[in-house]
Length: 264
Image (cartoon, rainbow, N blue to C red):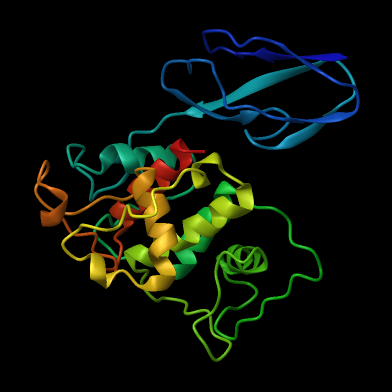
């Protein structure tokens, strides 16, 4: 047996050491330390939370931090008091969404290639093998989103839109954003896939607008708080809209991504 212990590296709090059988895989945990002032957790020195390492000696995992930057200070289109600021801050701090120069464009529509890149970033940007070929004619191998699209396609998280095209530049409907995350959750084997309310989508003002292919994903997302109805806060379900065919904004995408990462 070997001991895996944790070094806060300037943070505070404590994490209990764990015993691990020799030469077995150990999944790096979420950080349980409190970050130093003005810092956010990035990863352990041996990998990010969720990665697996083989333990063949006593091991100390050292927390790595980075300076926290207020998104209102770096994006000219965020004032700091908007409803979406905590969600944008979270995805920015965790390196899964960034801006477009000095703009975050919270009300702009999120596109298909952006979602695949977000998922790919969350997965740790795994290396692709020589056999992982780009099957889409509208995706060039040197484009920033190519690897994310190929990885998501390889893992059955996303497909094309027909005629060997991925649909670069196309906006993402709310139900399709949820579907991509649902398929990603399946590749991760998340516990949130269990005990889903199969009738969660029923009773909203626009329930009938949810396409049949998206119903399982919508039920999962509603059950786990990734998505809810639009309308007056506190209004009954029958007065709220899921807006499944509405194009998701970048602010909505940040919100759903934060909820997804919080449910892991």
